[in-house]
Image (cartoon, rainbow, N blue to C red; front, side, top):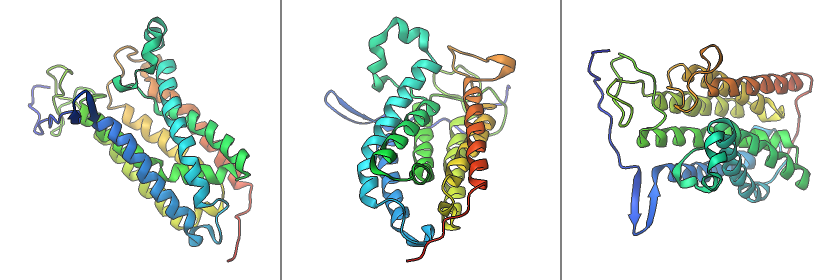
Length: 276
């Protein structure tokens, strides 16, 4: 632990642009660009008859309307999850701070719950197979995960545990010890790697088995998150929980189990075959 880190932390200003009282932060930009890029990629997937084996069970116009729903699901679910899972005593004492989104504090697992709710609701409203809508949504989700973790790194938050690896960094406000840049681990695995894997599956026809992308995402993300949590410092207000587990690990377990359940259901169904 006495070895100095080889890689200096790039102290990038968390605020990209300031226009008087208005500040555009990297973290907010990550959400905006992630949603727009995911929207664009989803439109390409839906329009491709090749990956569906024919016409998709939803239209590009459907997803254009759905983007508002999913954005609300991400924001409301993510914030609610953070309040309930990570810092409930604080927000119970200061309820108005629940709405102070600019101060940070979002939960991926809460966001997933919010997205599930709006996906099912929108699918029922439009008469769209909700597993197919979920497949498209989760195929593009790693884009936002990648950008979000990069924003965490730029903000110098959610840093890793102390280490002596050559690529360790000393993060501002994290004390004098070199630490794992765990945000970059998560960006690489939960973001980039998962995006590539799901993209390959889409190209190989996974969308013709509704739920296959959804189940694969849930299991893969859960396992990758648990792995990355082994290098990430637990939230200070929570610390380590039962048996050295973190909240991120505990929340990932039901996600994995749900994914296994979806994959088991998919295994009982025949692939959809279309022409035209």
